[in-house]
Amino acid sequence: MKPKRAIATEQIHHPYQPPEGWAAMPVGVFKASTVLFKDTADLHTYRPRDGQSYRYGLHGTPTSYTLAARLATLEGAEHCLLTPSGLSAVTLVSLGLLSPGDEVLIPDNVYGQNRHLCTGFLPRLGISHRVYDPLDVPAFEAMLGEKTRLVWLEAAGSITLEFPDLVGLIRACKARGITTALDNTWGAGVAFQPFDLLPDREPGFGVDISMQALTKYPSGGADVLMGAVYTREQALHDRLNDCHEHLGYGLGQNDVELVLRGLPTLELRYRAQDASTRQLARWMQAQPQVAQVLHPALPGSPGHAHWCELSRGGAACLFSAVFQPQYTAAQVDAFVDALELFGIGYSWAGPMSLAVPYNMSRSRSLALPYAAGHIVRFALGLESADDLQADLAQALRRLG
Ligand SMILES: *Cc1c(COP(=O)(O)O)cnc(C)c1O
Image (tube, rainbow, N blue to C red; front, side, top):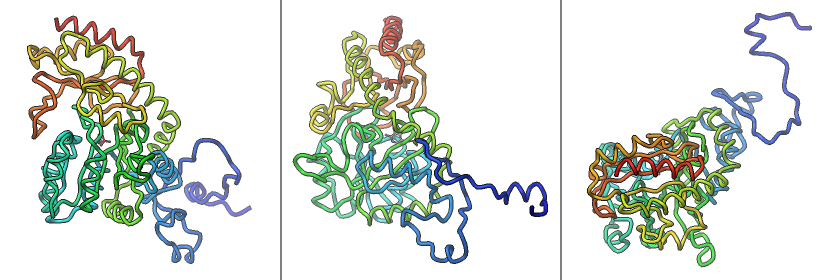
């Protein structure tokens, strides 16, 4: 027996090693800042990015590499970079690809914080932006110019949920060598395959980059913030990976574990929430207090035909209701306050249903895709659709 060392020394340099051959379905949670090398030769011969070796916890551990690999499969991508939030995934794409003098185009219904990045931060780097109508491909095409380096896409768009002509928009960019990036949080790899939008007609036709807020479906628990950026092309991945290292994006491996735990049930949750969302969207459309319901799978909703063309049947957990114009913002707020099962708060795809009234006049540059009226966005959770419908009914009765 070796001579006894001090308690702290023994607890740090303990000889016990877990036995080889351990097998279980869940992946181990490997946490590290320091990654230990076997010896100095190992240290000196380390080659970054061969997908097998590790240098420092910030760049990944077996746990996060496993999550990245599973997500890449889900999205139909070759590469996946994990980021600490959905917003940081958006930022990674824009900072990774844009330089002073460049212009980025965003759809008018882009995720609000992406617009905020374009208006509040990118100008400091000499990067300009313009806003396009996601439903007007000819007008979009006319905006593409010498300076246009990156085009953001979103399907369906935030809050108003128009489903754009993704194929038309991407074709216009491809013809000019402009990089496309899709915020695919809504599709989640279930509704359609962003790198393979026309698998029967044109295999491999799709976006250059996809990103997701893993905060939504992949987590599913309303308890994790995380994002992902996906690519097929090696050179594009390398460029984004460089930026990822420069920004120092790291992840807590317990959060990575939670997302890994959510993945096996992702499609089940997606389809279950989708089914109750369609039930409630159709029901709301029939209520006299409601002027219009926005949901890409509903005939008459903006971009419905484009959704039909691409979708493998998925339509997520969101719909928005536009109230009749006689109801004031205060009355619509009171309706939301009267809901008992819907929480009031941001995010979606978690277990609890949520409702948020939006003031659209402050957040858009172009005309809205609906007539006048105040709008509430609903995100359905996993409660029974009938209970949720009864809750909506009692709050609508109070609205009168
Ligand atoms: C939530 C969301 C994001 C941002 O994700 P966070 O993890 O909250 O930063 C980005 N895009 C879309 C479409 C989202 O819904």
